[in-house]
Image 1 (cartoon, helix red, strand yellow):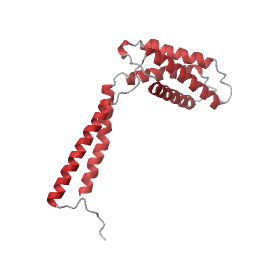
Image 2 (cartoon, helix red, strand yellow):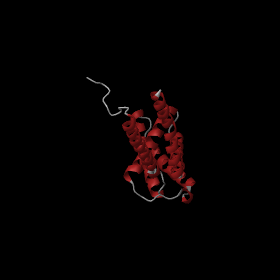
Image 3 (cartoon, helix red, strand yellow):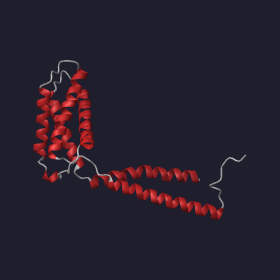
Image 4 (cartoon, one colour):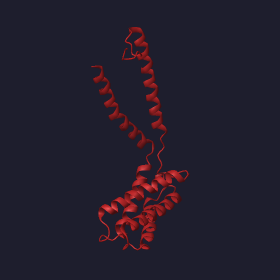
Length: 185
């Protein structure tokens, strides 16, 4: 039926459009993903080495790591403007060590024997602030440029308008009544 064809086309679009957008996003921003991995690995190393295993579980450390990494990236995206440096020009090992040392030094000044939630919030704040400072100083590229993805959406919008007008012309020729109300009194 016509409905089956519509849903079939829609489901194919729901499968392939995000894949295409993701491929284009990664292809046009090749430095972003490696830089985010670099930042996350440095924060993870600092957390795993500086937080005592008997005080925090792996799940708690993982949640703190996710919050810290997300907050750091969000802060860079929202509050900084700089021209990022290409990844080839960045001494990645040095940046990783700088982030690690900065966070490890900050964590070493915290009393981790107190309230777990309060301690984790302090650790997340230190991790975010220290990583943010180094990322900004090194001008790491962790911000996506969505220009080409937006062009894809523009192209899809133009194609959909084209098909809508073609359908309208066909409706007028054949009299399907697509613009008529479906409930008659």
